[in-house]
Length: 231
Image (tube, rainbow, N blue to C red; front, side, top):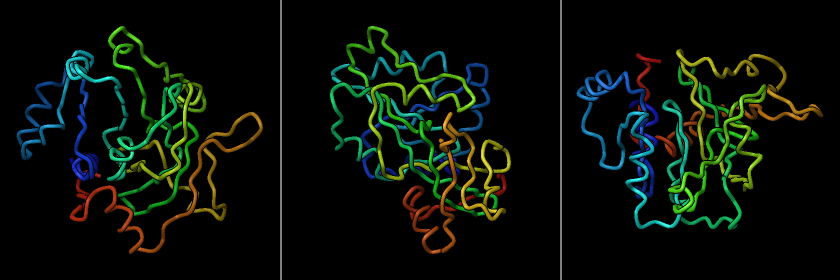
């Protein structure tokens, strides 16, 4: 609600559906928690994991293509990402669009840096609706030492160069740290390939406060405020 929802509401193109998937056993907790917030926009909906496929299929009638994006519940997309996908024309054989370049933001310390991930979770799967309805699913989850999303880069793909995502660090998320900023080495390698080439790394840190605020506003809106009480 404090981060990812702001990113969704801030999209310059609102013609999308966002399904926030939760475990079936938490339905009562989800419904009770939502009572503490204003009603969500019509295009942003909570749905149980067992109902996700059925809900998606029910929305595909009349469409030729289905673009399925992934976004974890503590991360963010740039305000123009949805609109970019509307205007972008991939090759007919392309099955996934991969965003390698983005940012990593530690909201507990207010640190922002450029980030690179060779096969990130911020991908867009492309299906022909008729194929999806027949059961086709792209296999992108391949657990390995280089992360579970590495299957995406093995599919026919195109790389999106723009910085369209933020990986969000907070006190209850230990997936990423800006430890490299505490060292002299400007780049921290998380994974490398067999030749030693970095597959994931943190790049330049954004130290100018005005530039940092400008970037965050492009993701979260001009009136965003991070509530640190839960971070």
